[in-house]
Image 1: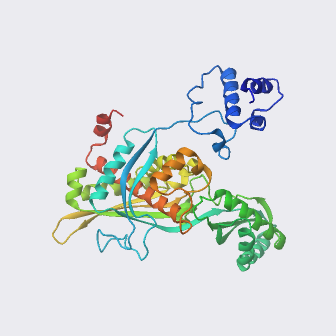
Image 2: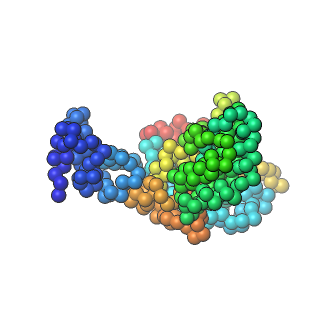
Image 3: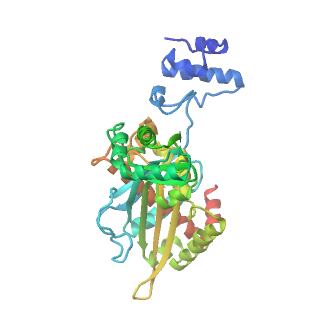
Length: 425
């Protein structure tokens, strides 16, 4: 067995580079040697970082220059009650009624990893109200992971020629793109022209994978056909019209990954009993805060804190955490609905335009995150393909809905500060 001390000395003597250690020892030994080197170079003690509970080789495809693991507290909320039936049980007038059932159905415990105190308590409060109200409906309404290369042309004439060819030859592009994957399907190619730049926004069904690497490779293959058949020259495989890991209006409008909506109708008496406020007060708070306030701020998201649940679920289940930027792009609506008897119920919904999630590949393969997906019953590929990722998106959406409901109720009842004080956060 290779001695980690020997590897440390070889790096310090410039005989090895720090990223080459796995070529000369097993993964755990390489990680130990790298950690020892950093301890000596920086005068720090990395004992806790080095105390991780999985084979280092399991993380080989997810990180480079590994020295250990960051441990984030993980909790669980739930049950998350999701109505997967064809129609919502809450009201015949509910906008959640749909012709097709959702991928998620039943009660789920949702693992969340975070360092924000009071978050899980708040989400759990919202979930309890939703469960008592009969559960929330959730549906994935659109699915398409995007990659948008940018091409150079001489001018508008060549741009129009390129767009025309792309429009007329979708099947050729589809055949080229799908030749690189056994799972992904090319759904659409939308062209955009800006002067002498042509952008092609490719959209794919990536089934149960989040699919960013899949669509990048597939789009690269299609770009070769575009260059061969048109005047366009590829400048960059990503032209930022995708748009990945950046706040972007195109994702809010067109979607990216999965567009998912969740809603619930809560009886007015339940709002008063459990949330200590009224449907009218919550609806007003949502309008003035999430809608008008967000508009005045120029926000791309019109919600209270959807990113909290999205980010915590991403960390727990092995999603790409940087994609929280667009995945939390959410519009929250709250409406007070009067019954015939004069009482007022609360209709609540969240619509997440670009939730990028998967249950296979990437960080979902790590042991901790894999176990979290097991808790949900969604580890690996679904049957039919794509159903597990759809279900995960729907469950996260209901979790976000619970978080919005609880926070808005706390604001409407003026209990937000006292709740944090009571929990010592």
